[in-house]
Image (cartoon, rainbow, N blue to C red; front, side, top):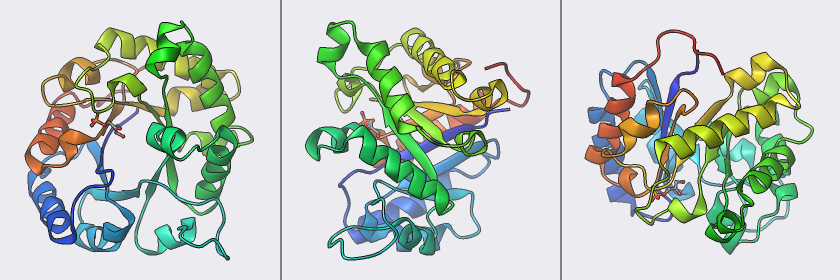
Length: 261
Ligand code: 13P
C-alpha cells in the first residue's frame, strides 16, 4: 500500500519567527490525519528549529537541497550527515529551480541521491519538462532520461524508499496545473520507466507525487488518481490553512487497501 505523502516546499521564504509560526500552525492543523505522511521543507536556517518543534509529532522535516560530499572544504555547502544530525528525514533533490538557475546536472543530482541514501535520508527526486520541451513533444524523453540518470546505480532495495516528484516546470508557480488525467498518464509512464530497471514489487511501491500549483481546489482531482501518491506543494504551503486543507483532502482519500501499480 502506498501512503500519501504531502510535503510543503517553502523555497526561499520566511524569516525565523514566521517559520516558527508556520510550523506551529501546521502542527495544530494536521491533527487527525493518521493515513498521510506529512513533511515541510523549510530553508536550511530553520531546519533545526522546525525539527525540534516536530519531535514526537507526525510532521517530518525535509531540506530543499544538499551537497554530495559528507564533509570537507566546500564553503557554503551543507552535507547529508549535517541534515541528519538536526533531524531531517527527507531532501528535495533536482528541483527544476536548481536545475535551471544553478545549472545542476543529472550527474550531480545522481550523486546527491546516492549520498542521501548512504546517510539514511530519503530523496525526493524532482523531474519535469519545460514548456519548450512539452511543445516539442519531448515530455516522455525528458522524463525518461531524468528518472534513469537520477536513479542510476541505485540498488532495488533502496529505490523503493525514494520519492519521485513529477513537477512540470510550466505548472510551477504559474497557477496552471496539469489535469488529473495528464498527471495520471505521466505518473504511470514514470512507474513503467522504473520497472525497466527495478523489479515489479519495487516499481509498484515507489511513491510518485505531483507538484505544480497544487491547492485545495485541485487536490481532489489529482490525488484521486491511482498513480498519484501525494503532492509537493509550493505557494499553498506558505500558510498553515491551505496546506492543512490539502493534507485533509489526502486523508479523506487515503488508501487503506493495496492498489496495483
Ligand atoms: P507551486 O505549488 O508554487 O507551483 O510550486 C511547486 C513546487 O515547485 C514545489 O516544489
